[in-house]
Amino acid sequence: MLELRVAGVHVTGPGARVAVETTVDGRWSLTVREGEVSLETPDGTRSLRTGERWAPEADAPAAKHSSRTADASTLLQQARAARAGGEMAAAAALYRRLLEAYPRSSSTGPALVALGQVELARGRASAALDAFERYLARGGPLAEEAAYGRIEALHGLGRAGDERAAVDRFLAKYPGSSYAAKLRRK
Image 1: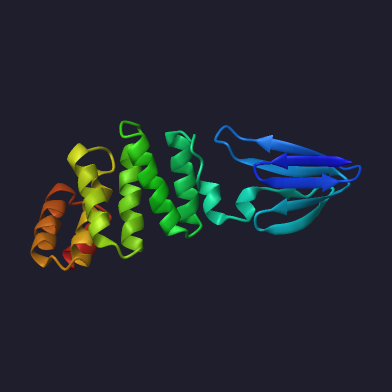
Image 2: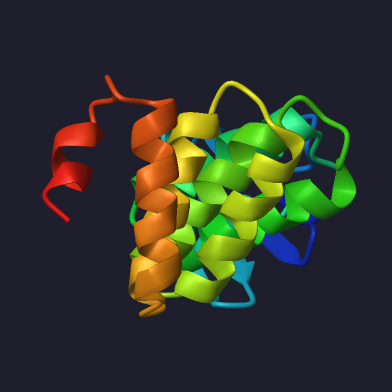
């Protein structure tokens, strides 16, 4: 009789064989190699048969983005995945976590710009402006993206004078930008 307890999950199955896999960032999953098992989780009970896999993240969407031991590149990957999946609040939280935990990482710049873009998408222009301005203050290869995002954030805040000045600076600095034609129409 198989009986296993892992992170608050109780697994039982007569004659079953399972494999428990863990990742470096603390996530884990269970795969049934043979037989059938019953899983008792905080979210309920379920059965799994040979070949089926289960991970705690499947029951708790936010959990797939919540490793305490994740490094900067892992957090950046998780944030990008959340963003791609339309989970903007989770993406913003992961970008912020990366920025707090690893302020000197090479992932910090891309995280700031992405955070600004995510906050714009969430309708949070003030938070977006803060992220873009933080990036622009430090500089880097994404300055054009950050400068454009800053313009969008100023627009979202209704700061027309600041927006106009930012557009003029942008066009002077990046006259051949893919954003230039759109900005010239403003």
